[in-house]
Length: 438
Image (tube, rainbow, N blue to C red; front, side, top):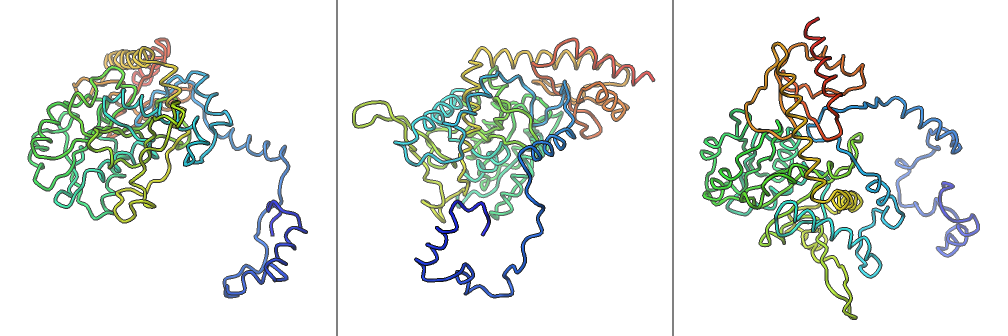
């Protein structure tokens, strides 16, 4: 037995005696000899704490840390106040345990409740859940919410994030549901194509706002078409943009989903991220994840409980539309602390600065020879440029500690957040100019 087992040798012998056996091998007498491990695993010897720290530091030094990031495409480098990092690290919150025992989990339950409330306010929807894994899985889970026996076809706009599209394709394939894509025109969802695809068997339409190219979609017009056909509209949103946008609820969305990473979570190597979901009251029981509610205890004091978890397989079983059991509580807490710290005005300022600085960079870059904005549409903080010498430009920026835009479809998708100052944007433009004139 491994030394990590938290019992002494005498305690182990006592347990064997209680089972009326003499050795651990007797515990596995029914296991065929052919599948038993005869020799010890070929593992290196254990290391001291100092040695582990030294090795991990050496591995971490292989990472390239950019002082300026001008790449978004789903992960955004926003400023994170110090308190947003410190509160979730408190031992009271730093746990993956699901708060089933309400009397023992009031703090965690309240933090989730506050998160849900703020997401509902941000999106304008009636109810929000306790989150899912990430924005892509939230979008796919939303498709599952909308299906019924008569409507099993989902439509997805190709102006959405490619990774979200792939995730939704995987979900639909696994559940034997049909998925169709809506082509784009001028960087936005082609509404005429959408209308032609809205048949009686369509359950839902997914559109991103702003879309993958940073462009604002005409959600009002899309919602009108979708509802006229009897389908539901799912809108995937950037939560920072929601601070200055018309809410999806005001535009007619039935379900709002998105990636919560911009709400206080740093850009890391793959996460962890946070998928938020909000919907109308009539769809509440279809939401995956958990819903925490506020009530009173027997003394009349405010109390928090798990109000809804009916979608889980351990309750609904074969009727469940989802098998997600994680509530991403720590990431949800982080988002709640971020939104509380920033407040409505702070988030609005972050959104306005991001949008303003993105437009400044786009205008200055477009003054350079052979650099053009691909889509002449209103956009938020991302824009796609057609430009020559892409590899040389990005390499030159990298040597100066700047991560340039994302190479995409023979162009570059740039993103600017509030963290980037005008002097740095001017340096980017000067660097691009130098490469293009070489």
